[in-house]
Amino acid sequence: MPLYIGKSVNLRARLLSHFRNTDEAKLLRQTRYIRYQQTAGEIGALLLEAQLIKQLKPLFNKRLRKTRLLHTLKLTDQGVSVIALTPQEMDGAEDIYGLFKNRYSALGALKEIADQNSLCYGLLGIEKNPPGRACFRHALRKCSGACCGVISAEQHQTQLMQAVASLKIVCWPWPGRIALREGEKYQVIDHWVWLGEADNLTRARELYGVRDGYDIDGYKILCKPLLSGKYEIIPLNG
Image (cartoon, rainbow, N blue to C red; front, top):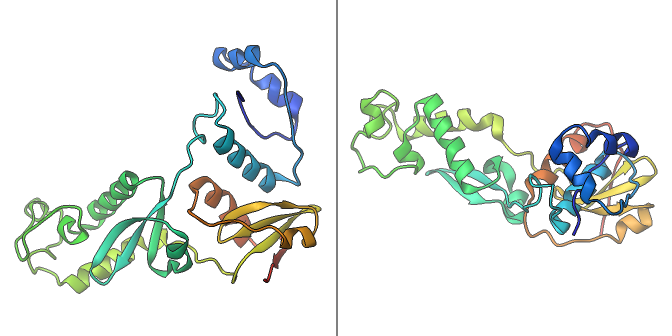
């Protein structure tokens, strides 16, 4: 069973760093052999590290071991709902906001947004409230009163959209797969999902994968470099 998977630009220094505390020294005492794989650079290393940890579930990589399906906040004319982030939802990302590791985290974020902006739990679907009746939070002056007509539902929706604007998910700006050039290699990506690393563009065009969900770690690794303008991006048509 694998004990630990990690990336480093200096393998010897990384190994020596594990002697600094008792738990990590225990890891080394259990180690029988070490395998390594060279990548094109930081992006490829991060992606491979996250993928291998989820596939092999090493004993000491607890944070990344579980594959996590993202959840998000989906805005409609009627309000907001928490949904699992599917490829179909990601393709139409104009009305989805925030990336959360589970439904519980998404609901917690929605409550925090409501508390900071005096939004109504009832209209947001967090709590059930009889139509036209003031909610409990309104009596505490924590709700602006959309539940009882102090402000309109349209005003409440506008406040909600302003409150979540900073969480808006960036829509995939390419029609399909792309190759990000990193050194002499190409990282092949489709709608934020890493499909693998290729030695050349011919091989990159042969890499395909099934998009059955979105992993929060992979998204966070890819979003910044893909949109930074620092890397050559080659659309892979067909």
